[in-house]
Length: 380
Image (cartoon, rainbow, N blue to C red; front, side, top):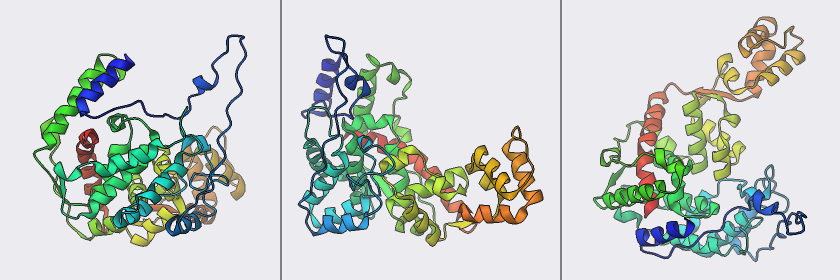
């Protein structure tokens, strides 16, 4: 079956397609030997000392204290094997793309996958993937009025390449939605060649359905779904566009949730893509798109029951462990409103700024519709 799929992909994309390295799988690590013993778990490779130029030195200084002690480009709270960046590196990649500094980008990405380059590989494949992204003829299928959008899309693609495998399998991830959200404040139009990608993507899905049950219910793409909706008007669109990509994605998580505790309004997929929450939170607040709120309901949506129980203990408020979050919140409000007000402020509870709420919701809806476009774009 594997040989058949790769043979299909070769014909489909008319280029050489090889199995890509994947994150180390626990089943591989626990394979039993002929004697019945379990081989020792391999240790992560020792971090490389980069012979970095000035751009990478500056980047290392910027992320100092944010990353893993051994792997400075990786998140310190997650296993280095997970390849989770410690920050949003898209701004650095865009900057280096604009100067033609591909070497720094490749070095950065090698640092991201360094602890887990894949079984039987030294990680050199990521440089090939970076080069492949740069060769992708985005302009043949999609026209952005603002050319910077092309750089932003390539930067996001480069980050997404850290997972290994082909771009066609991004359809099973949040990546296309992230592309759509980040680029939703940009005016765009599709070119006729997009129909080639739609047909290519549907052939891929039909072929995968033959062997992989997951794809049986995956819908085919319709031409009518690939029409970019109009760009909303208003100052809010420009404010969103000025945010970094990481802050933009964090903002959309907050908009979809309707507000709440800002540092918590992000999921694992977003953190895996690369975000430093204190930075993105600060950017969002400084933009004025969200505002701090004293609404207890927004606190309740983002705070688990265990923390509300702890709040009652600290405030000296009588409670029962069987109470739900509504009753716990009401008890705090009745018996210790000052403590609740302080708790909400310390938690950074936010709401959509009424001046921009309609614009933000319209952009969020536009992003959901654009997701289909960025899914078929994965088949370039």
